[in-house]
Length: 125
Image (tube, rainbow, N blue to C red; front, side, top):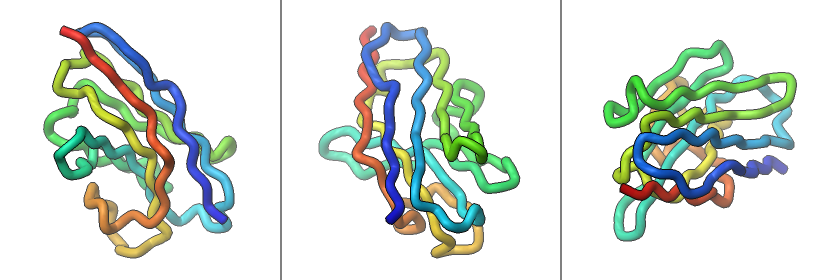
């Protein structure tokens, strides 16, 4: 059974940095892509950044140049380095993985079939 567990959330002032981590277990095939999503109450879950098995990445326009997604295939770890945080970045952040529902890496929620429980990020102005 695939399990994802996030950590690293917390509170930070605007302009600060945080690094989120996600530990994945239960994968039998590395041919997946993984991503970070975020959600604030009352809004839909938003794709933030994704990475495929070859290290290719995709970012939402709102985080380009500030956030960096990376992964460690040996440790089955997924990371999100968030710099120059803004109050608008405050949200619950979720780690997600796709078993290959679609062949092309996306930032669309329906294309991911495994989800973590989330870690809260708070940014104060």
